[in-house]
Length: 277
Length: 318
Image (tube, rainbow over all chains, first blue to last red; front, side, top):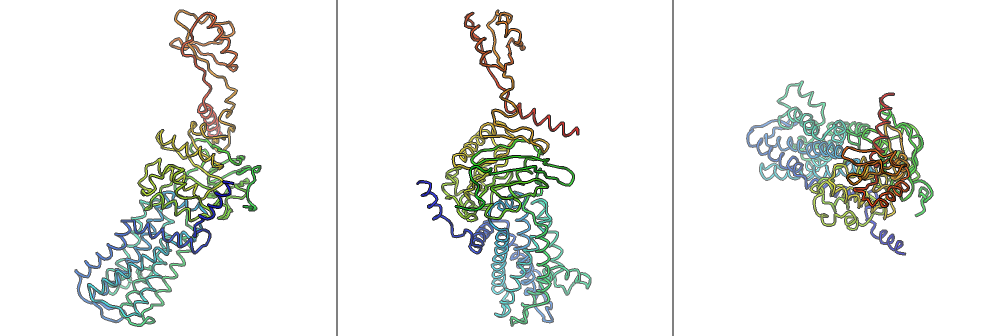
């Protein structure tokens, strides 16, 4: 009798999240956002660092450049260049460090031992990255308006949101792919620096691509950062949604995302690389 | 309740037949057979690199066997679905806390993964962490974190729990408190697969033990019978009062007794009761007090070291 009562109680206590994929995804996403909020390193890297950089660059460098044939002040250029950087840091850099750490400390292995589907764990991290990207994009656009009087038309804002969201997802996928190549949490940070730092200069983030030689520009165009930046810069000088979307750049981004997803699916490991016999 | 893979009490919870695991250049597990039954605490002993972790990871579904059959709760772990993982709990050898959350939040997160989880507060209570529930998991001491690991393994209310070296690196007090938690799992009716290299731990907790060395099972039995331990000679040790030569001992004993430096006498005995009776009878008759009389059996550690050293050396020679 007490056993029956116990199992009845247990059935009533059954949480809403159990078994339904969408509820599970919400359950895991809440947790991902909670931990992101409590991680001081990620908070600084994601929110403080890009704003700081924007204020410095816009304060130090004055003048104009051209975006798609339109003359713009350098401050406008930096807002969208550094927004690109912020998106890459919020999704790619955060995930590479987080996943390498979770894997090597056995946390991923322990999660894998539970009934939750890998797609839900990965999906929640991707959603968390996109939410972070959305918050950061909002912050950057508000700062642009308040500090530099840079406004966007509603169509351009919608296009920026779409490009930023796709960018967040693509760089999250690349983060998953790259994390599979990293053997220790200590190696994650240098790998992130090595894979991003040169691209800040070659992709229209901190320097206009117009200042680069043809060869350097072509090198930059191989990598996805340049295409995210180009997409965001385009929206900064247009007004309607359709004219603010750079289809060619988004296609290249999506291709990088698809390739990274396939690579991650083949290479991804839940077990620490130091697995014993 | 009625599920086609439900294991009845008669069927083994874990069944291993001819299990082999090859890595590129060596064979870590070389054909082992094991059966673990419902409700038992089974200890899997072996030195580092003996194939212990590989075997456990195959049972947990993390690695695929190269050869042989493995059935855990009626399924092949490598192909088992999520519903199977809901029935097992795992305490990994090395895993850190989920970052950024408290002990309670961590349990709530994991509880959400399972179809019928245990109550979070009740589980915290069970591992004696109720007082630390709102502390960040990463700020807990080593012993407390390991108990949180046990709570995480229990939160889904599993039938079978794997504990991979659950007390490695613990101080004696933390080890003892973890043993209480593990012994408590027996009372909950769980089947426990424990790997360890602490003999005392296996002796305390396990119903049955198997020893693996160089990828093979070299002995199996209960803590009392492992490696024929119950048949090995015991040692009876005692001292005679000053001035009593050992030649005065009763004849059957005098011939077998050996003197140790310091005057203590040692008697190897396979019939302890009879030999003690003779010895005590003789002492009473002569009104002698046998100082520091002691009977010792070979420890599990003696047996274990003998088993694993022999096998590992043989393997290295071949």
